[in-house]
Amino acid sequence: MDDGVREELRRLRARAYGPGADIDTDPAAYARLTTLEELERAERAAPASAPPAPPAADPFAPIVRTDVAPETDGEDDEDDEDDDAPRPRERAPLVRSRRTLWIWAASLAVVAAVASAATTAGVGFVPVSTSRGAPQVATLTEDPGTQTPAIFGQRTGDERAFADFYGVTAFVGTAQIDASENRSPCLYLLDTDEVGQDGGNGFRGNFVYGGCGAGIFPATVQFVVADGMPAEFIARFPIGTSVQFVYDGDNVGVFSDKG
Image 1 (cartoon, rainbow, N blue to C red):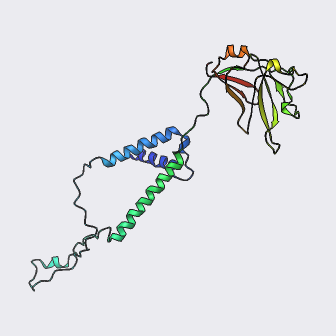
Image 2 (cartoon, rainbow, N blue to C red; image 1 turned 60 degrees about the horizontal axis):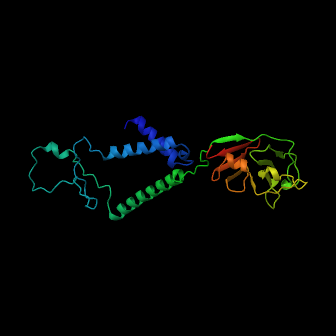
Image 3 (cartoon, helix red, strand yellow; image 1 turned 90 degrees about the vertical axis):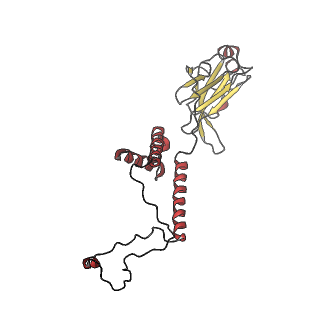
């Protein structure tokens, strides 16, 4: 692994484990991080080409000083000049006691736990798809001449009706959605043959489907076609078909799992 790859690995780890980790939003970067970490582990596990290192010193062995001259019987050394030369000292073991060894091991465990927690927080959640990929099969056409039912309560002027769609009529508008009088865009589907038949703005019929939006989420109505729907609707969307009507604020799109 060259210096460029190591620098890339360092940057990816910063995005995965550092403050403000964002790698969970970049699947390609996360896959690259996994690949480089596997490469690094394999590189560490590969046998080194250099000659084997001498056996490691026992961490619990006493420190032996070698700079103290041994006692002599008074005889002169063969070379007096060697007496003044400095003698090498044996390097002290890195770990001098069992207590130090346990502290060192505990610190490694803490680092590993923090890294694991960062990974879980950054990329540990399971993504959930918001769509099943059903195709859009139609966009409803607005029909200003259709009466808007009273289900929307107080009029706001943004109520709209759409032309008959295989025996189903769609209405959109803003309706109160909770006790705090918050209002949101809503979409309702009614039986075309029953809309306004009581002489007012009400509705009757075998079905009423409705759904309201919330903030950035659009008003959506979705159901599985069953008995009770208009015959022409069932002819277009057979019983058992999943259908979805979505109001994006301007238009109503129709989606179906069977096209």
